[in-house]
Each structure stands twice: as structure tokens, then as C-alpha cells.
Image (cartoon, rainbow, N blue to C red; front, side, top):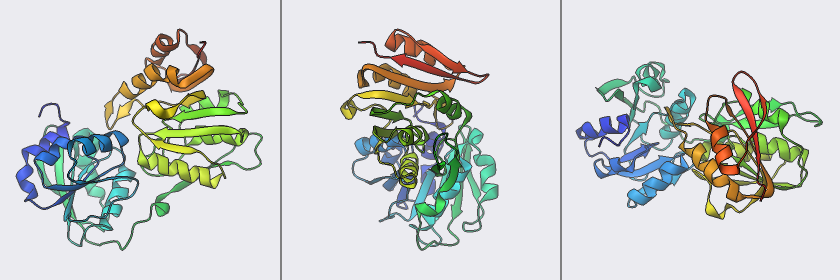
Length: 343
């Protein structure tokens, strides 16, 4: 059990508290909990978690998406607390639309993830939280649904931002959802990258870890002939990217994946602000796997452009993959890097 995350360890140590009530499990990283708990269905918005649950717990109902699944036989929910507070409110709203009045919602999370204080801010639609178990630097709390919702609409939770774009009559219209990177707008690193990206006119472009699609949409507006693919691990991010494309009259392919897929094909250009967190933990593995594999997905003379915090080890990884790494720009926090496939 030591290989499990601290919240999962806490849950398994107190499995008797769930009283064999059929559970909808939400955002759980490890499928091993299904072996000990009365899990009948799961809801994931992380593509990697979803794939592992399908492989390890094939007998339950699986749902990957931005909205909660129909509860089916579930009479309660067990939520692994997301690190974003706004996403917790979003999840509670969604669960109120699929579970019955009075149903229990359990939440488990690490202390440093905010669970020790977040329950003090619960909306009136759920009851006051009770602390049920403490351990593994984590906390398990319990609430119940005080007010059911007749339906849940993802569209009602979009946040919209207009981003001025040079040489465009209209600003770029961005849509975002709670839990999407830099919600509700964009971060400084992406702003710096946008300032230095070339004006490509045609070809295939991959926006890796696309978030709400700002990089690909910005470039596509400059060059309508670009064929853009948006890839992200998050169903929430891809839902936001789809809305961003719709708002700007753009087309593109949106792919849910924890990393590069063999069948992606090759691209002329790849742009990215690669992630380095999994939940609360610093995790370079997605970025490392991306840099190890991206060269084979670039055509000859293809270009990789990315922005990252200067303290991260991306230059060495880029140089190892491509034989060189050009630092295009930097400030006191971020750097923009370029690499080209020579052969």
C-alpha cells in the first residue's frame, strides 16, 4: 500500500466507514481502491487515470469527461480533492445533479492541498462537513447533499476572456473551465511564447498540453491554412479548447492523452508550455516523455517551440533529443526554447 498516494492510503485504512454503500469514485489516481471499496462507477477527467482504471477495474462503469456521469447504482460519492478550489465547487455542483437528496459525498485530500480549510467554505447546497479520519498527512471529510440540482450544464461554468491579438480585427476569444491551467485567462509564460512564435502559414501543428487552446488558436487565426491538433490530459481542458475554437470560428482535432500517441503522425511545428505537476506533486515525467518522443513526431526541418520555468531542466533534455537547444528569449522566470529536426 506504500506505493499509493497518501489520500488513497487513508481511504483504505478506513474502508469500513463506507458501509458497503455503492460508490461513484471521482478523480481517484489509483484503481487499487476499487478492490477494497464498493465502487460501482468512476468519473475521471485525467486521461491517464481513466486509462488505468479501465485496465485495472474493468467491471465497473467508466466515464471520462467534463460532466458527471449518471449515477446508475451509486448512492454516494468519494472524491479525491482536486488542487483547484474552483474545481471542487464545480464537482460538488455536478454531483448534486446525479445523486439523490441526502446522499453522502466523501472528500479526501492531502493537508497541503487545502482540505483542512476548504470545507469551511462549502456552499449551502451541501451540509456542513464532518471530519471523519486523519492520517498520512491527509484528511477524510463527509458532507451530504442538502439541495439537489435538476441538471448540470458545463456551459454555465465557462469563464470567458478576450485576448487582444495584433493584426486581427477581433480579439481572440478564450473559454476556460475550473481546473484548466491558468484559469480563467493565460499565464505569463504563454504570453512570452506568443510574443516570439513565428507566423507559419501552412502545415501541421501540434499544441501539446493545450489547456484552453490559446497557442493553437492564436496561430490558426494568423494562418487559416494551418492544420492544428490540440492534445491534453484533461477532459476539462479539451472541453474548453473546443469552446475556444467554436467562439473563434476555427476547426481542429482535440485528443485526450497523457502523452504522445504512436498514431499521431508527424507535424511541421509543435508548440507547448509543458506541465510539471501531477496534482500537488512536482512531476517532470510527462515533460520528459514528451521531449524523448517528440522528435519522431516532427518532420525533417520541423520545429519545436516551448516555454518553461527557467529552473526546470528542459534545455538539457531538448539538447539530448535534438543535439541542440536555442534559447530564444527569457525573463527572470521563463525561457523560450527552440529546437529543429535536422534529419
